[in-house]
Image (cartoon, rainbow, N blue to C red; front, side, top):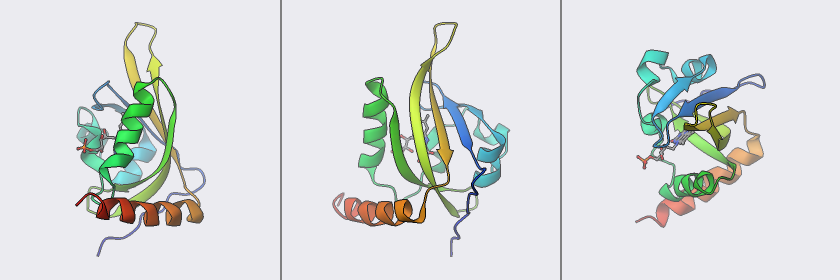
Length: 131
Ligand SMILES: Cc1cc2nc3c(=O)[nH]c(=O)nc-3n(C[C@H](O)[C@H](O)[C@H](O)COP(=O)(O)O)c2cc1C
């Protein structure tokens, strides 16, 4: 059985990706919660932590929103290296570096119990509609 890995109030999971979602930077909380070393994360596509319970449309919303230059916020269920899971309240947006390159940043905090139960119900429904 997979177990839930709980974030605490001080947890802040940060990652930076290129414009395709390949990880360029991962902070210590990302490694600690997801169970990977930095070396295992850098260069990998961000779907390395994708959980099978997440509906495709949730990520379409993320990509469409940041593609329009807007900030995206949502509740995401992610998978750890050993198959456990963790819920996050995620915010993602595009930044323009001083050298002119564009990057995508995501910052994730502990969600509330209500946010998790709302998202869990919604994602179950959306998953059913995928088939
Ligand atoms: C900055 C950034 C952060 C992301 N964080 C996550 C994440 O924590 N979990 C996740 O499953 N996908 C995340 N994604 C989306 C993935 O890139 C990918 O679209 C998603 O996992 C769906 O996988 P698929 O493209 O293989 O269907 C992130 C994307 C970006 C740009």
